[in-house]
Length: 356
Image 1 (cartoon, rainbow, N blue to C red):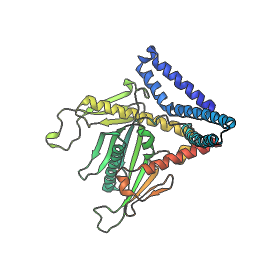
Image 2: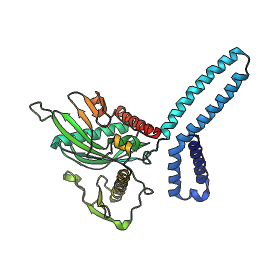
Image 3: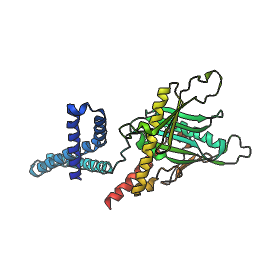
Image 4: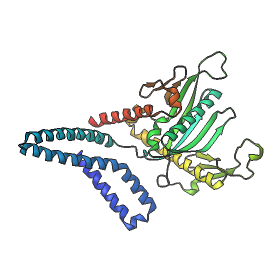
């Protein structure tokens, strides 16, 4: 552990020196990459320095205990030694977690997509419930949520919606939400009190910056069209909606939420870059056949990850077998207990793997 901590701290110092170099500071792309790398290892460096300080203090106190003849002073020193050793144990535990290989996208913002699945109108209504849950969760965390594209019905249902979530480590928390979410409840229109099952799919992608994904202009097909409004006086007379197709992959991004064609293009490009990055991440994960990720869940949208049972006020996350009976609170954005369970499960698997 000590050798790795020393190497990480050396790298941290190298980054600081590089960012202070006038020649580097004018290169925005390089500075951004260095800043992201530095932020990713800052906590590890701080914990390493704290451990070194604690070990130094312990050495000094042990020397004092050996040399001190005053029994009262020795007793006080032994108490302090016990406190320091307890702190060392806590720091070492935190370090083991920090030394787990991190997802390089954890610090990124997020692009999320929710789509109604099986279940007709009820699936669309559940998709709307899911969207509200994530909107409330973002609000609880002080994150900014912005709708980029959507297809809603007059019933308050959502056929599909695409939105961004910007905030500290948003991806590290929301990435576990990818997959099929199933709801079991009695629809408002059901006269026989029968419980219906419907689904919504959630996709969570790290928001890709230009430094992450380079997209060549010649690989893009950009189409401009009129936004699909509800009619009446609000229908725009100028075509502002944007559809961008990435010809090499066939991936498509659409944005029609803004009145400005330029803003719609910027948003569509952000979605497209994130979809390209997500596809690349998925390809790499399949190649690695990573054991830890297969245990927590691949994030594939074909995988059922969670069930929301209204009659029993129950939510079950099938990946880790966690059940909580706090449906109303969860749908109001209080889902940390579930996400924390997934994070802890993944960390435990990683620690077990590292010990083998």
